[in-house]
Image (cartoon, rainbow over all chains, first blue to last red; front, side, top):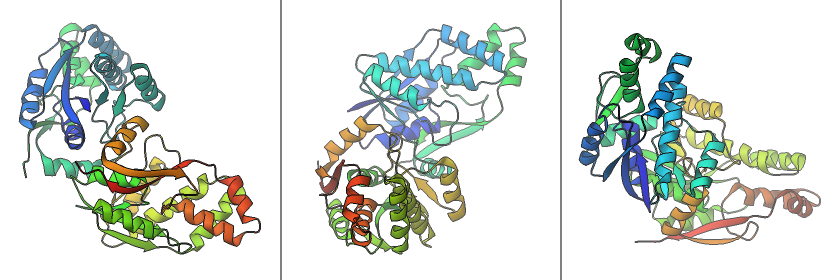
Amino acid sequence: MKVSVLFSSGKDSSLAALLLEPFFQVELVTINFGISPTHEFAAESASKLGFPHSVLTLPSSHIEEAASLVVEDGSPGRAINYLHQQALEAVCSQSSCRAVADGTRRDDRVPLLSMPHVQSLEDRHNTMYMRPLFGYGRSAIDALVRQHLKVVQAQSDTVDKADYEAELRAFIRKQYNEGESIVVRSFPEHIQSHVINRIYP
Amino acid sequence: MKVSVLFSSGKDSSLAALLLEPFFQVELVTINFGISPTHEFAAESASKLGFPHSVLTLPSSHIEEAASLVVEDGSPGRAINYLHQQALEAVCSQSSCRAVADGTRRDDRVPLLSMPHVQSLEDRHNTMYMRPLFGYGRSAIDALVRQHLKVVQAQSDTVDKADYEAELRAFIRKQYNEGESIVVRSFPEHIQSHVINRIYP
């Protein structure tokens, strides 16, 4: 069975693809909202990992809406959740999609779908939503990543990665007065990861 | 890394072992409370699946306590949860245990550990608790089972399987006045599965 895995080139979505690989026909999908070409980094990582990869372009109006949530909340949580939901809906709406997966972990708070939302997604699209990392805690995931992936880590604003945050930051910087200070204020600094290859045994 | 997988010979714990197999050194562990030799069926299934298997015998006082919960509640949910917790604690207490896993699914209500309980288990034993099926819904799991496992299915009281319910039923039948009618009243009939082999590609 074919599974479309939402892919940012971060270690979580990369590991999700690796866990699915022995059991499904994995295809990576990177979402882009037309703000900055972050999908190019993802395409490179996908090629190194050896999976087919495609880019799904969604309307920039989603980023506009998400940016207004960031400004309203002073933090990116609700905006990231909103964008992830749009991404899942879009992938599931493709006629060829029987199953969709992401890199959501047990300890994640954002993005995270509630159980009623998961059921609704699966029922409306007659699809399967898979979270291969959802049964694992941080230390198990760290161990799997160390064993299987070559990763570059750095502060979230300096890593080339196709996550929602990158385009969201770029949009706010460009479109808002004092965009830079909104970004600095609203996005907590954290370590981001970008996968550059597998560790082949 | 070695992972001890709680194994009943049912399809969930069997599939959990299969999903872990490409990434960990899987060892199956069947719990027995000394009431009936249900672990013998599990040993046979484990051998067919090709995994090392051991039996961990726990005090029958746990079944006694669980039986009183069944009688008190008129249903087996709390008792099964209690036995599963005792099983996880016992496996994690083994000095060789670095990681423990089970076949808990996303849609399971019983047995199910709360998140604080999961954290407590991992912290107290300095171990990793893994639920490989936790990110999958029923239809995805059914598809994986169909593809990888040979399964016998029947009403829960007629399947040879090393789950908590089998010994719990046997204990209540033997030790309680009108044990048979307590069992009939308290355990809802449902389809149980017993794995007899892999489907080799």
